[in-house]
Amino acid sequence: MTQLANYRWLQKLYQWMPGLSALINYQKEYFNYDLRAGLSVAAVSLPVSIAYAELTGVGAIAGLYSTILPLIAYALFGSSRQLIVGPDTATCAVVAAVVIPLAADNPILRWQLVIVLTIMVGLWCIVAGKLRLGSLADLLSRPILIGLLNGISLTIIIDQIAKVCGFKYDNAIFFERILSLPFKITDIHFATAIVSILTLAILISLKKFKPRYPAPLVAVIIITLLSWIIGFDQFGIHIIGQLSNEVIPFSSWADFDAGLMRELVVPSLNIAVICFISMMITVRSFAAKNNYDTNADTEFKALGIANIVAGLSNGFVVSGTSSRTAVNDVNGGKTQLVSMIAAAVIALVVMVLLPPLQYIPSAVLGIILIYSSWSLIDIKTIKRFFKQNREAFYLSSCTLIAVLLIGIIPGMALSVLLGLFLFLRRVFRPSDQLLGVDDDGRIHSLGNKVQPVDNVIMYRFNSPLTYFNIAYFKKRLISLVDESPNPINYVIVDAIPCFTYQDVSVLMGIDELVHSFKSRNTILILAGRRRTLKRWFKEINIYLDENYIEFAYDLYFALRVVQSKEHMSESDNPDEE
Image 1 (cartoon, rainbow, N blue to C red):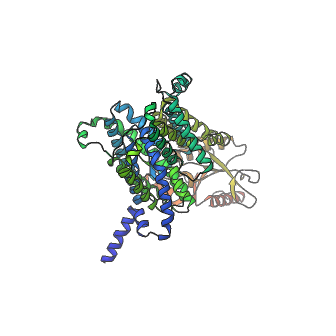
Image 2: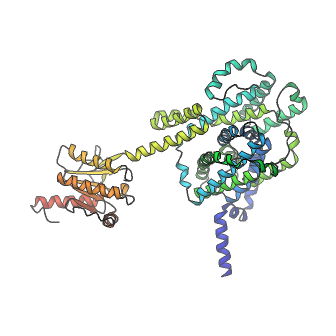
Image 3: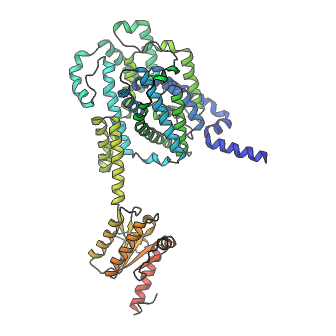
C-alpha cells in the first residue's frame, strides 16, 4: 500500500511538473545535443535580454534576471520540450507602453511597476490554467496576431531609429515621428550612426555567410571591445554604463503607492493573453514538427509560474520566444535541460562578467531591437490574406493601423474586440447549406450531381442554436418554404451541429416554428439527437403538435420516414404511420 501511495504521489508530481519527469528519466545520449543547444541559446539570449531591458525602460541587469530563474521554472513546469522562455519584442513593448506613463521619470518606481505587473501577469496565467482556459489560445486569430506583431514591430523600429542615430523625438505619436524624420537629419550624431551601421553590417554579414553563429552576441562582443579600446564615451557615444547585480532595495517598497496597482489590472490581463497566445503558436509549431503533444492548460500554469519567478527575481514579463526556440531546435536540443544549461551560463555572466558589459553602446542594443523587430514583420502573409480571404486581410490591416494610430494597448484591445464582433456576427448569421441526394443515395450539399428530394427541404445550420440566432433560423426556414417553386411537405433539419445544449429560447422557438409550418401544411423533422431533444422539450413542459414534428435518428433515417409517408400517401393511407 505504501508503494502504491508513493507511486500515485509521484504521478501527481509528474503531472504538475512534466519537466521533472523528463529530467529524472533523462537519456544520456541526448546530453551532447542539449549542451550545444544550451550554449547557443545563452549566446543569443544575453544581448537581446539586455536590449529588451532597455526597451522596457529598466536597467540592463533586469533583462538578465528575466532569463535565469524563469528558464528553470519553465523547464520544470512546461510541457514543451523545445520552448525557450524569456523577454520578447511584443510583450516588452506593451509593458513599456503601460509602465512608462505611470512612472514618469522615476526609475525606481518604473522598476517596481514592472515587477508588480509581471507578478500580476503570472497570477492571471495560473488562475486561467486552474480554470482550464487553455482554449484562450484561439482567442486572437492568426490575422489579428499578424497585424499586432507588424504594428508593434514598426513602432519599435521607428522608436529605436532615434537611439541608433543619436537624437530624440519631439513627440510620441507614430505617424508624427515618421513625418519628423526628414527634419531630424541635421540632429544625427555621426559617431553614433557609424557604430550603428557597423553593428548592422556585422549582423547582416553573419546571417548571410555564417547563419549558425549567434549574430547578436558576436556583434555585441566586437563593438564592446572597440568601445573599451577606443573609449566611445569620449566621442559622445552613449554606453549603458556601470552594471551591478543589484536588486530594488526592500526598504523602497514602503513608499510604493499601492493605488497604482489598479492601473495595472486590465493591462496585466491583456498582456497575459498576448503572452499565452503567442507562446502557444510557438509551442504547437515545434511540437508538431517534433511529433509530440503538449497541454495548453499546463502551458498556462507554466507561463504563470515563470512570470511570478521573473517578478520575484526583479525581472520583467517573459513569454515563449520563437527565435530562441528555433535556435534550440536547429542545434538539436532534445529536452528542457537546454533551458537549465542556458540559465546556468547567464547566471555565470551575472556573477563574474558584468564589468565588461558597461561598455556596450546603447546604439548597438537599438540595432539589435530593430534587427529582431524586422524579422517579425510579415507583409507576405497579409498579401496572401488579400488574395485568399478578404475578411482576414481587413482584420489584420485594421489591427495594424489601430496599433500605429492609437497605440499598442488601445490598438490591441480594439483588435480583440473586433475579432470577437466578427465571431459573434458568424454566430448571429452563420452559413447554412441545402442538402440533397446523389445517384448513390448519399447526402451532400446541393450541386451538379446532388439533387434535392421532391417536396423536401434538407437543411443544415452551421452554428449552435442560441437565443440570439433562433429568430434568424426560423425566418430562414420559413422563407425557404415560402419561396420554393414547388410545395414543401417536409423540412428535415440536421440537428447535430445546431442543437448543442438546452436553451429555453431555442426550444420555444421550435414550438413557434412548428405552428408556422402547420399553417403551411409542412412537417418539421429534426434529424439527430432524438432522445436528447425529446427529453429537453419534456423537461421544460413544451408539448409539440406531433402531427407536424418528427424526431429521427439521423438524416438517412429521416429520408426513409419521408419516403415511407409518401408511399403510404400514394396508397391512399395518409393517416397510417
